[in-house]
Length: 46
Figure 1: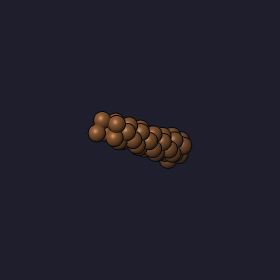
Figure 2: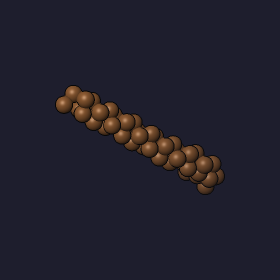
Figure 3: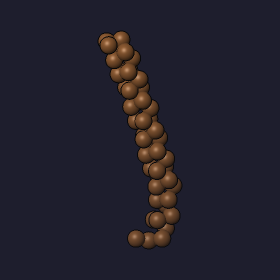
Figure 4: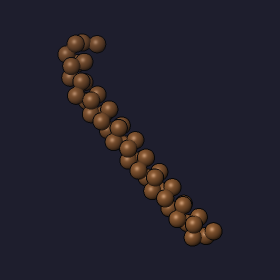
């Protein structure tokens, strides 16, 4: 690969990493919401 192409892909790589981090944090929040829902339903049902 050429050095220029690597430098051009730098910002894209950084954006990809940030996107993955945001995706993981979003998934973790959804998981927490599901856990709280299950707890509430378990408390209500039991």
